[in-house]
Amino acid sequence: MADRPSLKTRRILFFSIIFSLVSPLYAQRQVEQPWWYTLEQGKRAFRSASYGDALLGFEDARRQRRQMYTRLETEFITLLSLPEVRRLGDSLELVEQFIKDRNYSEAGEALRELYYRVPRSGLNNSVQTALAVLNRLKDYPEAEYWIGETYRNEGELGIAINQYQKALAQRQLLENSGLELELLYKIAELRRVRREYPEMEKVLLGILSGIPSGGEAPRDSLWNQDSGTFAKQAMMRTLERDGFSRFFTLYRYNNRDVEKAHRLLGFFFYSSGRHNSAPEHLMFAFLIQNSLITEELIHSRFDFSFSSLDDLMAELKTRPNLLRYIEEIEYYKTAYYLAASLYAVGKTAPARELWTFLSRQAGAGEWAVRSAGQLEKPYIERPLENW
Image 1 (cartoon, rainbow, N blue to C red):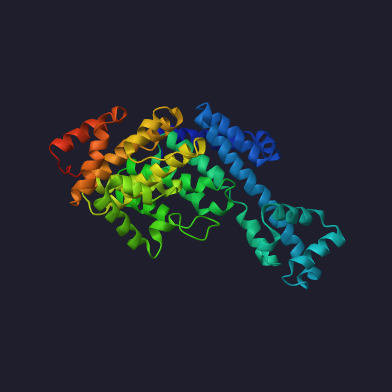
Image 2: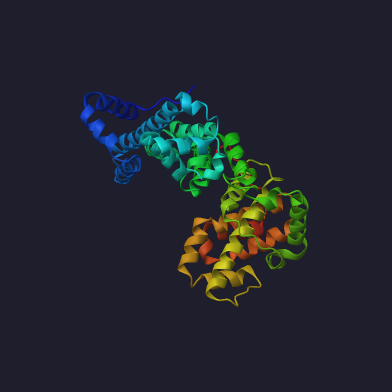
């Protein structure tokens, strides 16, 4: 059954409809201001927790943008319907010259806006392509995203997911390219909260294997490349045979975009009893975490190097920003479950090495205590129904 809005949300929608019907003068005034300005007004209302006003603002912004590009599209189509223009064929250059020569200002405005949003080279000198792009520009993924954020804060998680997916479907129009990845992680998190674990797993694996808009390779090219299996096996052999010090000497990987996806997949696979799938994801997550930490330390001290994880943690104690970072990325939890997953597949030596490291870290809290317990009497945790 589809998610139904709560009573509170239905009230917001009701008053939104009434507002648009009984206040045409206000609506007209809203259309006259830029859609991006209306979006910013919605953000201000959102940040002050005025979610009803925020929702109205985001929907107004979406409507204003659609109205503007619909008007431009209509003006351009009207010009193209002229007999003398139809004879020019699909050549955008000829049509543009006709507009200049005859001073068709409305159609000229449509082309100026089009060229502002899209490089001319991307239109292939095609009138039909220009029309298709004008039609696509009616969409406003940022507004869809913020509408989703509003519903998420109101507890309407199913509707929020639908809005995030709408924004993703329009990802080519995002002004902030980083928002695409944020949307994917938010969808994955809401799937987890709703216990829709197969869908969550699919989204997280999609982050690793998906090609970002404008990109040419998957986000995690190392994990996906043809030689990736060999690389993973070589990395795991190094861990098992030589331990973590040698592992971090040989390998560096600073792909921060995929660290969280690997981490969450590792947690999920271990907690659901899929132990064979957990180690490689947690290994990648822990490698990325330590690579990024090391890079940050090298930026402030070019000769920095470390021979053990204990050395690295000793250096971090004087860096408040990095201490905040390791809390944000669940560094100690990642290390604990990497050890637990290694133990679960029979790789006891690196597991004990990592638990020993954690047991000595005062800042590791719960994970230090649990690691000490594992050293004394190791065990594989029972799968969890609700992760």
